[in-house]
Image (cartoon, rainbow over all chains, first blue to last red; front, side, top):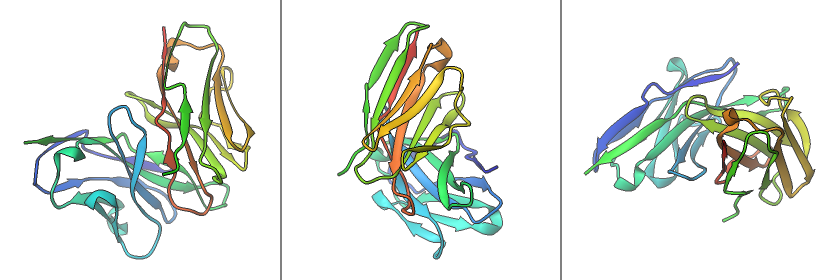
Length: 117
Length: 113
């Protein structure tokens, strides 16, 4: 079964500083990987996704993530954090269901990003 | 932007009562998920529908939970009877098979007292 580990429960970053959120996955086949963001009281919004091809993927809001198969990682990065980026971030791996292709998502426990002035 | 609509937004109910949560997936999406979010367990998959057929509900307590899609515009999650441990935020998400990524609703916050 697939699993996702986000080792950092909380991270505090100064506004304007760079950000990296860690994500490690476990999955026997080629993974489909996602990052979602959740603001308080809201649903999850898709930031970016990796299915194949270029291992550096660009997403919305200036985020990017790099897939490293050798490290089973899919870390999320942003060069300069804005106060509005404060939210909870979830990494997810998509698992093939009944050999029919990409289907269900397994989520990590999330990393809460706090942005200090 | 197209949205997944969930109702009610908040629900407080007494233990033992029936609770029904509704989800309107994005028009044209053929896959629907129900997830439950709690502080302790994070996001747990409860049920998964493709073309209105349930494909996986192994994460759902069968004795009290049921999920259905009576038509392509409505998915329901029902708890009967509800218990305090069911208190959580329940999310519905929809997507198009073969596409990349699902759209989540804003959730139903359920409190069972």
